[in-house]
Length: 272
Picture: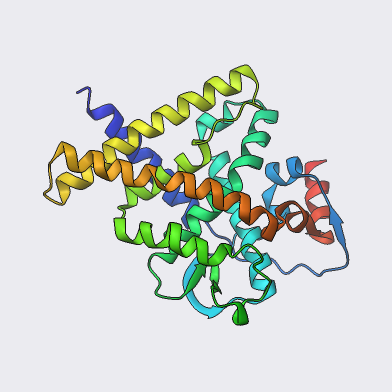
């Protein structure tokens, strides 16, 4: 019986992750009149100001344009916020701590998700949410990749993740852990406690899902389980380093805060 509870908790987390990824709505036609900027807190609370919840498409059918790149960043931010809002441990935090967590963990989450999608593709680049991909070849890149993030992501993330052949449960746990892996001293004392508790819980979940994977693959060895956990944990320093490099390329705050005027005003009217 003691083992049943964590299994149920992990299964619930995996279902929640899948439900958020599967959530989509038919995009509403919005006539673009002007642009307006709004702050990060407002976008975190109301991500639909930024992008419609289009169906995620990691098929990488075409090379991304500059519009594809911007649309991908926006859609990924909506996905990220939806996951945060669906997570009870996050919603227990006060709003200021939630926003701090979101600011710090969006890029790591972004990079991890693109790597998870890219593992299924043989395209030389990074899969986006809209059926396009950002190539490593500079002559085909829609925007300058000054820090060579695309090639670094492929080498340090995409390839190691492809080699791991992650299960759905492992993917879900890792996606969550990416948001909580690095410490955040900027949080309130209570926020730090909640953050630490969630991180420790996810690390336990990671061990459990790796054990389940090894048993399913008929390698029921404690040593094999430890090696698998270690290989997954070794991804996180790369994610942190790539996040620092990618922040210059994405200019996330600037690009994310350009919102369609009609959409913004309509949402504000509903809030008021």
